[in-house]
Image (tube, rainbow, N blue to C red; front, top):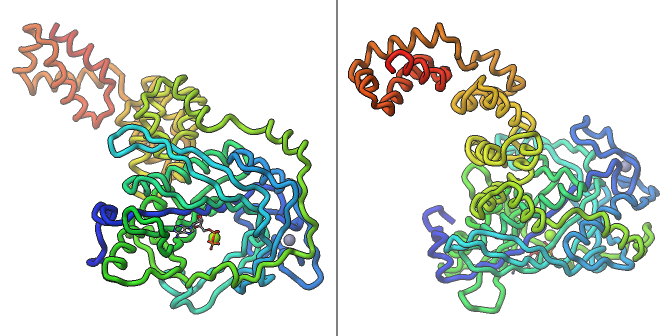
Length: 503
Ligand code: ADP
Ligand code: MG
Ligand code: ZN
């Protein structure tokens, strides 16, 4: 379909109601894999973290990782799910080179957790907060696949590649897949709800300490299912499934794009194909992947090599006691402690900045300053590079270091931007960047006094006004000094010097 024929989002939702379904895969941070003792560390040399079990060699026998079951139960409880008293693993049969066993050990009709919900908050079309309840169908345990690397093409995709390499280090890493029921919300809010849900799941996983939940590294991945139905209809349309969307912003964009694409197909009387799709960060579009099997094609059957998992109810209750404060309660508490307005809090959440702001405040920064940096300067840079804030190469502690330099009067807000440039470019700590780039504010009276004298000489009218008692006019002279000193003058001291000379 050509770009031209896409129906704008706002037009599409006048005729169609979007229906969403979100599948989120969370890679657990257990030390070892789901069914063997191989380590799970990210970034090791290819195929160095493998054994007969995760390579699927004949005769190898899997064993369930108890820590992964514990994490699954805690995630289930945090999602307000019921926990199965007994559940089994199942084989999901399909061939793909990154899956050496030719089946994925997963759960099918007996997930460990089911029937839960999470409440997310978004900004309604009238600017007021709207709370939307997302129903969770199930959260189940499974294992990750390996990774293919397609070499020689221009896109990194299999099409046009000369050959492909396979790395099985990731094969067998524990995953929890969290699947929602179909979600129907006010059409205009669908993209925001999808984004807010994924952002909230990430927050929850971090709070539970069960995963790094790094979307940029693939330890939290979202598949976005979307279909349209004519406004008011109760019959579901055919869905597309946009796979492995890897930032909050992309989740929102993927929903938006698929609405415009589906609407164009339906308007033209064409059929939506049930298929997986790839999302393209560069232009926010999707393209066709593979046609999607129905569950029957996977020939699921119970895994014969693994005993059923039967979490003891007393243990489940014990784990309930280890849950972190519920995100809604935590948000209310933090908002009160920080004195943020509803709008400030919502923007902070929407930017996926809550934990970053919290950590920055914990590192000693005033709440409004922490918010200002993450939602202003740093959000702009994340946006420019198309990443999430959490993926920027700067930590809350480093932001706190920049603020400490401001508080000490050694740099000002304007210079701080250049310090952020340096820290983000890997030039070292805030302190090192200030030294290397010569960014320190000049408060030495000799240098400042000379610049003040020159400014007075160049602006005699302004100087006269100040002599006549119009002290506001000093701003123009301060500006002139700042300009000459490339923003590096101590503005307070400059003002004092001007008034000393003209007062
Ligand atoms: P699959 O393994 O085929 O992806 P899942 O059950 O794991 O199936 O996930 C399907 C997801 O898509 C669920 O979140 C479900 O609510 C959602 N879904 C199912 N049918 C539709 C539809 N017609 N439109 C939008 N979402 C749908
Ligand atoms: Mg799925
Ligand atoms: Zn292994």
